[in-house]
Length: 517
Length: 119
Image (cartoon, rainbow over all chains, first blue to last red; front, side, top):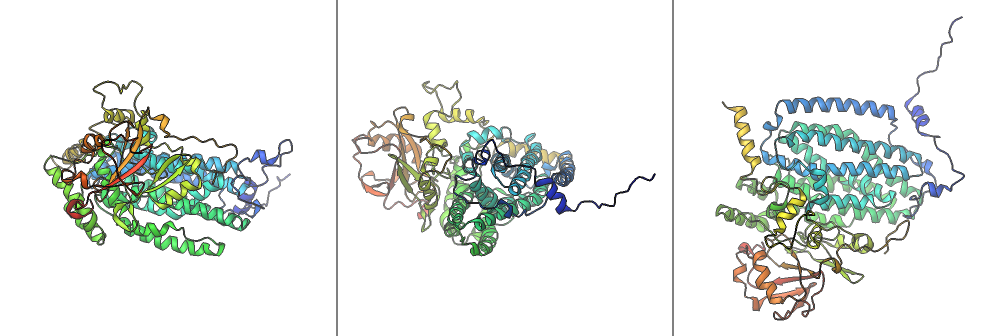
């Protein structure tokens, strides 16, 4: 007897997706569904029909593994080749390596936090569509953290400042800026997290983070970092789609959701813009071969792209956040203000600071004709003169921090670039200080959340940033050295000026060895 | 507006005055001198004489600026929380009404930073 042959065709993507993602759960009867999904309602977002969620990409787990495995193979082949050929000696200049230190310390651990965040909200959404999408994104974020760490680990063999990034994220003063950004998102409800990370960061601002770093890597001969950027690109496109779909879904489900979503977009656009100050200074000051200025990047990726996006969202009643007006003014200033900060505090940073050369200052004058020569060149030229006379300026007094973004209060009044912007609120008898109207507004909306901020300066003065064996009562107690020991920062190697550093000397010697007899 | 939360949300102030071993935090910025990128923060005993802040603490923090040696302290204009304020240098921080996390600014008329740039 002949075996019966099946004539059924292979399942289509849509069918397969439906079979593998739908009808897998059930309505509980012993416990109310509100207890199964305890975080679904407290934020005030009203969802009437989760089935109205349209999956923006119908990716099943088997296909996901296949695509990602293929990308990994390519990535690791390139990384191996780059590392085995001593690719690090082909970069423009070892100053570039400091951008990687900034990325590995400040950004890669956030990828890991994003992994945790999407795993968490994926668990908490009652709708299966967003649950599946969040699960994929959670895995992507884990992969990004891993591939970034792997791409940069080769530099750790040759350069200082890479050795303790997970510990430093928890301890080093400026790391509280990216860390508190993500802690703020992670500790909010699932819908706010999606607006914070899925939409405001991954959609509105992501190009301002990844394009500068990936192009910066390409321009400066770092094929390793460039390749992980490309390897993450298709994932990022998926993340953007998810963020936008989530916004659309919330807005279409109930008109009461509109003001809540608008408030979160306003808040998280500003929180993201403040974190991007680090990228601004990286572009303008840290890349030996520059891609474009921060101001130009802002104009392309925010002013043009985000304006188009918010024009699209206008039909839902969503408007451009007010903070965009201040950001339009700030684009002329923040990179200079931030690099001046890291220059003077480079004794306590885990990467090097340095002064722009006279050619670089001319580049900055050309890119910032309305501000650089007037407000910032005198500062850098003064420091250059001081350094030439043996008085390299290191600021050793701790700065006042903004309670919300946790950046030192370095930003100036939108109406006066020579005046620090001071804002203040009082809550339950205590004073709180802010760098801007927008950070103050965020605090005033939820003061109980932000009074908990782990501000590094306050923590140092409370005595919480010393090793257990440190004794502040000893006569020779040196608080700065003790804080550096607590940071696990190798004093004299990881910190201080690039000029005269071990990184500078080693790179010069190794490059010479590789090109001469 | 209170935080939206799934249960009670206790108040946990991370930098209340009781955590500073008897000191108060004080913030001071020097207007038009942005070479110091941000106002400074100190934890100080409230019984400290205000004059000792200027004479004992400021030089190590602000002294690197070429304008610092030129300051005529009798002409300095002070602001507290952005409003004009007059300290008595011989009285203590507490007697001058300074409390935990107060924020002072001072202006030095005629001294406007490096080459008058506000730096």
